[in-house]
Length: 71
View 1: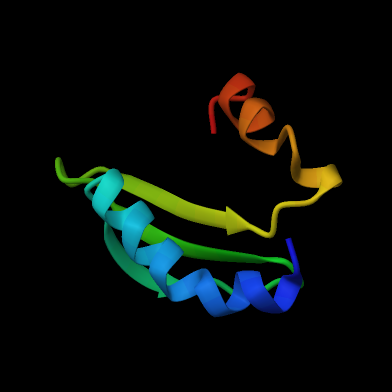
View 2: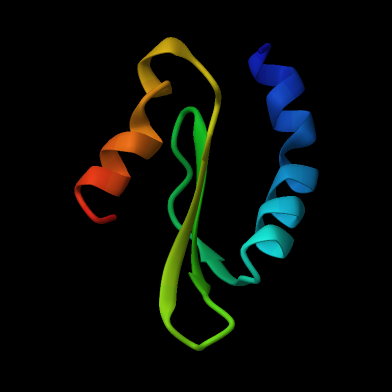
């Protein structure tokens, strides 16, 4: 996906992810080169982090790795 296209879709992607996982988003962490990361709170009040990355080869298995390492 084109990085500019992804950045243009980012507000909708953030909203969709927050709705999907019932997150209340907090402040965004320092912006990276190809991602969005923000503090969040789950509906039960437990802390979480929302991380959305530009789809590319190097991030293909990042979600699997985070699950394996328990976040």
